[in-house]
Image 1 (cartoon, helix red, strand yellow):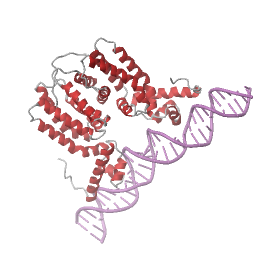
Image 2: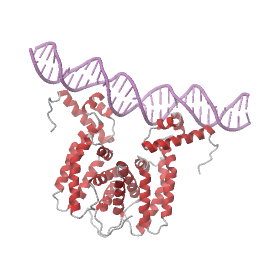
Image 3: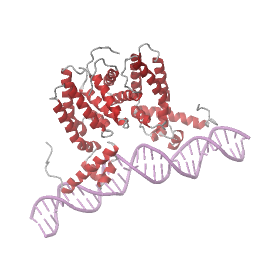
Image 4: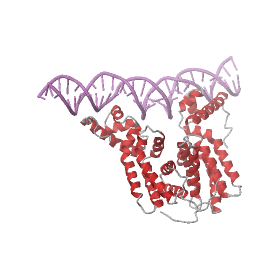
Length: 196
Length: 196
DNA sequence: CGAATATACGGAGGCGCCCTCCGTTTAACA
DNA sequence: TGTTAAACGGAGGGCGCCTCCGTATATTCG
């Protein structure tokens, strides 16, 4: 669907592409999704122009960097779809998601930004994962385990908010865990009801 | 405790201070807490040096801008402390808090950053409000309405996360509201229990 | 009502980042 | 080995952060 265009990349281009990716991987891990692109090029031993030719936007670079990660999350959701307990499956996925996301500082922000920008590559790249998460949500709702008014957007927001929260209190991983638990409890169908 | 130091400000200094504050108020409303400081000075019709003399850091400027807001939140908490229902009081405060915070784009981030930096002016300025929120939390816990393992830090994190979430989906205010509801439900003591 | 002086002002300048554009280099192919 | 399309690199313009210091002025005091 996208490989092997008219001609393959020139050898130097292919090599530089990989170098950029490696440098980006390293720097994004160290400094988050707003790492300096010039620094990435510098570390790859390449000019800034080369970076921009391969990755026209920061988003494009991030997308390439995270594609596998998203795909793994999608696969994980699909697998959990066959787990016996729909609620536990959803919970497990949320945990994995938010842990994975908070591993890259700033990723939660980037993903939410991508959500609103349909033209962004990150946006497209997340769709598969979102769809899979949705399936988990719908199943849990069908089983009566999760409130029916929760939308897929909500789910995405919760998962990313948990990652956002975990990022802010890196000193205490407990906090992120508690945050997620609170959200999960809030998602569940309540026996007693009240409003306002 | 801090007014009327040795000598009062010079007349021009006082005037410029106010102009800067007004320009900052406007620009922060428009563009969020990461608005350009040079643009603020420009709009105030002053040099950048003047801005930095009055407000040595972005934090200092924000703190001055938001002091009243924080004080209002503190007062509101104190008032709610005398409301009959401890849980409803806490919920009402969280609503007000997260609505107020999401009014300034980026404020949730700034507050969480301030939380970690004890030397920051914002940090100090939030303390009163945090303390008051804590009182509300403790009362609700004492009444058995809120899980006892929730800490003040958690509360702060929840409130700010709700604001963060609301900021990301400005198109649909419903989403922010639902987010908060979920968290509130999650905070409440559950009758049935289970883990993992 | 003038100095004298402490205060305050302004913006140039150094640095880093973003992104574009185009002259130079080089891999690929015949 | 020559040709050429593809790729490289970095200069340069724009913007923002922050500091430093020469200039201007409000205030004070004789």
